[in-house]
Image 1: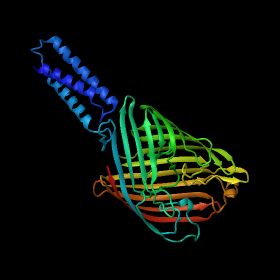
Image 2: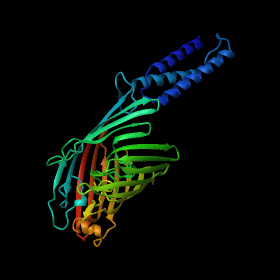
Image 3: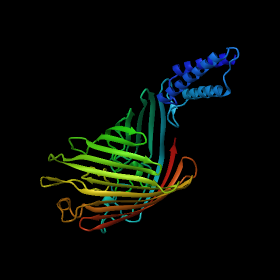
Image 4: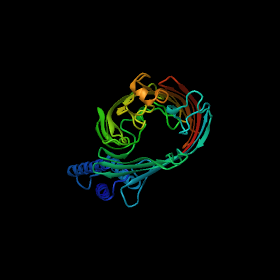
Length: 430
């Protein structure tokens, strides 16, 4: 009888749901499927009570729902819960391998700082210093990574490890470097990844690997907790790896809110700067806001503002000056930065972005910090403009071109100009 066959089918599906480990879905998804099976069984029992067993038969709609649910559970056994990933044999863990091979051709139209292949306007030569118009061809920014996801009763346990070949070593940067290495579970993240103070969502795309000044660009080891109130706000608190010599971790607090038209965020930072050779230390603070606005379906406006008092490694605010020991007093720069970008996707193969970033010290040449740093060394301001296009001729291949202009101004008024062309070819997998 059709009813008996359906009952047996439900029993079989229920046994499969209990015996087969979750693969393509999370623990929550499987609980929902089991609940649906339970509801279907109750519906069949009601039919039995209303009609004689010989005459009873499930409705076509009920039969369709049962078959769809059985197919969904069968698919869950084969796939992984990460798009483009695969299930590790004999386990509930899914893995995705990804990365890209990338080559950059960079041609300077003016002499630039020798310390980095990519833009380094903070050390741009002033006057007639270092006028060599160098050309660089490098593949050191190629990268690869691994992601994993394992379903649990409290959601997925996720890990990520990513590396590139742009670490310092000897005469060049052609060394393996860890970019990300962390685990994430039940609202906690522990490991190395983007700083919680960094506004990655509102950082415009550049072909140049370093990007513009005026923003945070840091990947510290950290402990982060996220408390998300759906449809209201996402709150985060983190303890982050300090700069060398500090005696306590940095504290970051953050709030994010998404809207149909874009998003907003606000960030707070407390960090310690310390001169390990003398033991001098001082607490600095930071504040940031950022947001994006969808001008059209294909055009996005992004902006962020960041202020930091003291930055020992130059990455909480790109372009800020370093702390300086002034005869027994540790002095911190007070810097303000902003980045604004306008991106447009012209079609499925072509996109472009305009970006401007600037960092400015609030101190002048007569201030104690500027005098202690050196008027011809410390930067009053640095700024940079990017204009780029990306073209995708075939899937997984991107060709980029970008023109870059920059300017550095020291406390004593000297200036140095940067201009260059950066061409890029990127071949991605997964």
